[in-house]
Length: 258
Image 1: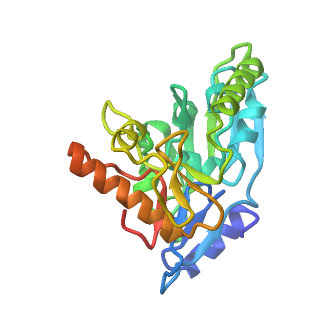
Image 2 (image 1 turned 120 degrees about the vertical axis):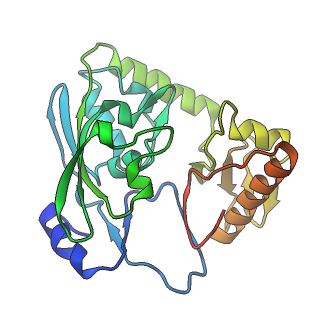
Image 3 (image 1 turned 45 degrees about the vertical axis):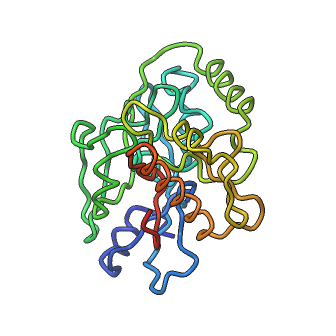
């Protein structure tokens, strides 16, 4: 758990293909991996600097704290309110909701490669797309921090309250889960396909497809990672068989091939 960018730079050359962790809000790690990778957590690198409309946040900062810091100056990031996890994780998967994504506000991302060398990548070269970025596909690029620009506008805090109230009304996260398990394919919705396949409430062990939203797999008490993976695999195979559509996980997995 390096506490600074300099400490991280000194650590990386000694590691072989490390797995970099943020808030672990969308990570499914096998119960039975024979050879665990080396994990590096960036949660102690969590500073946020503001000079509105510009902000700089380290990878380990909570996304919610960045959004909260920006809301008095801009309503633009309000749709991202309530998304858990860190800034680095959000950038990795270009997290978004209600028509906005974190990549919309990025000016540049500072990364390190496996040797500890630092480089700055402009937003135009980050490959931001629906739940995608170059950082998700290239693990040699470790997100250290990012620079954001949030366009000035009023009403951000009020809009954020509306978004959070809507999330509470939907009651999607009353049970433990990793959030949306699959990406939405094309012009359809993974949840609609899974529900249409009759899998709402489908259960293996203590892992089950949520009865409130079929793209969420919940832990009913003592679910193992293997339980969750089996439920997800059943959803994927059933949707492929019925609709010839291959669902792609939004959740990051280690030790599983879903």
